[in-house]
Amino acid sequence: MSRTLTRFLGDSPLRVIIKLIVFSVIAGVMMSALGWSPVTIYEGIIRFFRRLWELGFDAVYSSFEYLLLGAAIVVPVFLIIRILNYRSSRS
Image 1 (spheres, one colour):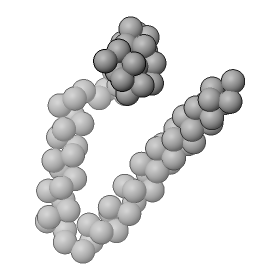
Image 2: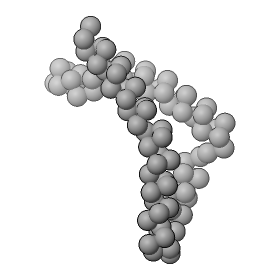
Image 3: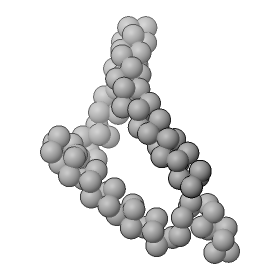
């Protein structure tokens, strides 16, 4: 059981919990600095889908803009994570 859980989590459960706590604090500080809260994110998602419904085909263009905007953050983070995982797996 313990090996399966460790393999699933990618590390020991205690280390994963500590990492999650540290990243949660960092994300919380960043969100606070930007004036974001879980409610504003939720409302933004609802507003996005409402606009998508109301605008019809014009929303496809807006969605493409959102895709590019999100990809500007997601793709570099993904690449950094993959590089770090690759480096740690080679050690």
